[in-house]
Image 1 (tube, rainbow, N blue to C red):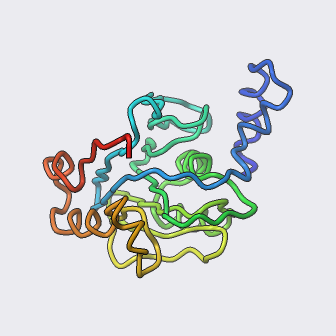
Image 2 (image 1 turned 60 degrees about the vertical axis):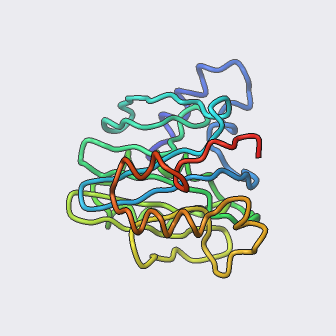
Length: 212
């Protein structure tokens, strides 16, 4: 992601730690669990966050590093989701598998895609060229296309059968994981509902049991 190096250096130079540049690369992160659901359609991307409010930055940032980008900030300058001035929108969810490898965290990669790509096809090409540290699901939307892909350190980029995702990649999902996350139930619900904001505000897509 060499196009972002000047911005990385500029941001790191504003922080007091000599390790700031390393931190801001978001490389070699370890798996963490978060439960989110998302769905795309041509020109529309809808997602929810199942973070406990105190564990989410909750900051929407408008920036202009390489081009105008707006999105939900994560880890300094990464993005959980966002859109650029070309109309490309991207969003991530955790892939539900606790494996890791050499690569970058998806919030950094989503930043890169929005800074350098105009269409879903360009973003897919960018994703294929970047090593990803932990399993994630990515939904990409432009004016004409919507697609969801599975990525991770141990799998090739895999296009799913439709443009929605919860928190699993491979089937079957272990019973204990399904009981805790309801990932298959949520995916079935968002598929049935389509791009429907009201459905995102009802169980099983809406969850509030943060202590679990």
